[in-house]
Image 1 (cartoon, one colour):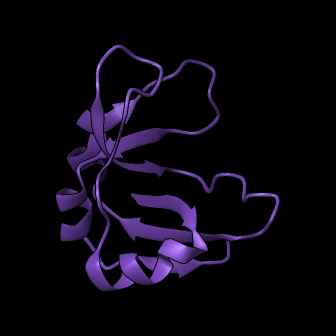
Image 2 (tube, rainbow, N blue to C red):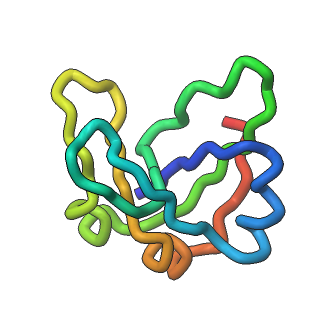
Length: 96
């Protein structure tokens, strides 16, 4: 499954040379979650155009347990541990 990850351009070189790192947050819950946000479609670029969009292929059965299901949302999102994402890398930059 092709996944997309958007990041600020300033993080591009770090991701390409060192891989993804887990982010951490509550993400509108009462629990702290860690991982790298991925989606099955490109997300909207920032208005200032200062983003890099990465793609990476990970089998759907491998990431299914990390899916964040929200009814009515037009995109599938996954919060995947960085070690897992990096094991399928390196990611590629896309203009899609």
